[in-house]
Amino acid sequence: MTELLRNPEKLAKARTELEEVVGKNEHFEAAVAIVKETFRLHPAAPFLVPHKADTDVEIDSFVVPKNAQILVNVWATGRDSNVWLDPGSFMQERFSDSENDFRGRDFELIPFGAGRGICPGLPLAYRVCILWSILHSFNWRLENGMKRKDVDMTEKFGLTLQKAIPLRAIPTV
Ligand code: HEM
Image 1 (cartoon, rainbow, N blue to C red):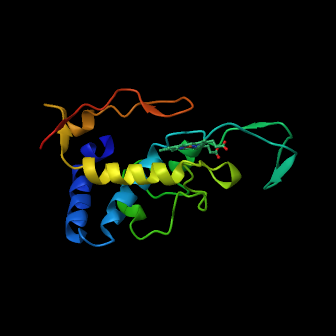
Image 2 (tube, rainbow, N blue to C red; image 1 turned 135 degrees about the vertical axis):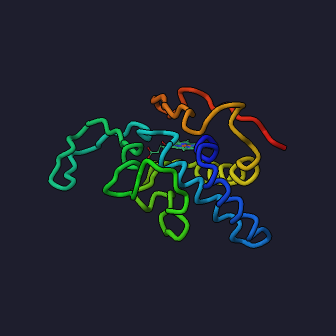
Image 3 (cartoon, rainbow, N blue to C red; image 1 turned 180 degrees about the horizontal axis):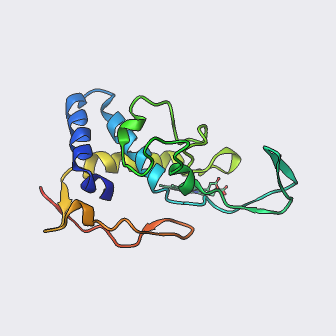
């Protein structure tokens, strides 16, 4: 929500796309792209959950020793310029015609983890996020007098990622 209020042209684009296709199956696509882009920049679990190596494992000639605790930095992957064009910008259109998904198949984007430990709540969380994105994203504005550039995007890292300064927004309908 914060990203869309800071990027009104992206909000307008998504709204136009949604309005154009309401009534068709595609009306989810804009919302899906927004949710993916949000998870890319702001993964709810920035290091997934701690994993542990059962045995020595060699990956690209790098040895992960048995019993090592593994933190997967998906926050950094989401902002890696070797992977993403202009990674710091919120651009949902990067997912518009993209096969890239967050169900654990595409390692560029694994906000729910991957493999056997993947989040079992993914189907529910995914639907709730899409629904929220469709229903609530569009009729809000930043609180009085606040400029887009003044929105504080500082993040608070923990097991989960939070906004350090909560968004303050005003509904317009
Ligand atoms: C935006 C919503 C959510 C995100 C981003 C998320 C993310 C994650 C991540 C990253 C993991 C660890 C996966 C790994 O390390 O490989 C995880 C595990 C888990 N999640 Fe979620 N989750 C979400 C919602 C939910 C919901 C709604 C439920 C339950 C209804 C749920 C239940 C679980 C459980 C039980 C595990 C532990 C699985 C295991 O270790 O075997 N999550 N989740």
